[in-house]
Length: 299
Image (cartoon, rainbow, N blue to C red; front, side, top):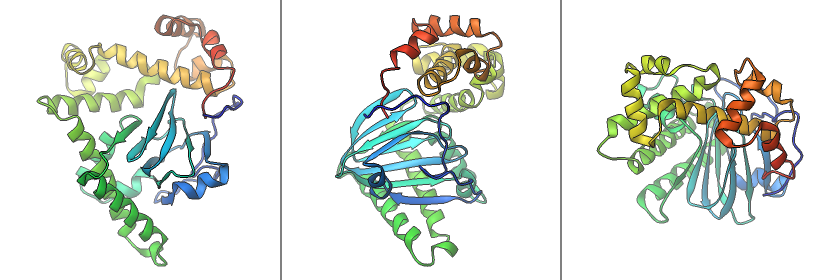
């Protein structure tokens, strides 16, 4: 991916390049080509506040950055981007697909609880959702995105509920597809583990103890640790710390701010303790880690 200068802050957009306010009922769909063509097929690092985004890459290659993770991939697949996740893309002239951006209130308001549950589970973490070429699930997803793009562009789209229905169907189908990919004999445990991940995403900077996470899930700390070990081989606190480290890496990589300021933003009262914490988990001090990325970062 292309290189770029480290920024004083990570830009936040409603739509890439547009700093307009986020409307409570916002739902927008556009082709990958329509916007990326304006930027020579490269969408630089940015984030969205209070907005969820799904990229449907129907055909062609892409390079995807989600926080500190970077991957080369090829359609068909979906890229799921929760609010606040730093992301960037590099496409080719042959890459084809759609980008759905929406305020979650627009999708779940007034709907059955199942849609909210699907939204929560699907956006528990950023992810690439793979599809098999020619499979029934792939054809369904491609059809839903194609219909949504057509309805969104229709002359009467402003007064039509159809784009909203189709967006809900996409969220539901993607959540079900992910659930089938992860399906196993411990389905209930996996759902509970997903709830734990959602809590970690919301509260890792609050430095909750494991007892607080367990209480929120109606579990004892011992049972929560058994659950997490069964899914990952790690203790619950290890996952919380890993999420903090991932957030620290993100900010050290993309934000040109003093380490002490980043430490406070991550909930650490003592910057020196943050430095020790980071080195214990990565083998590098924050400054050394930042230095390793100073030559250029994938966009």
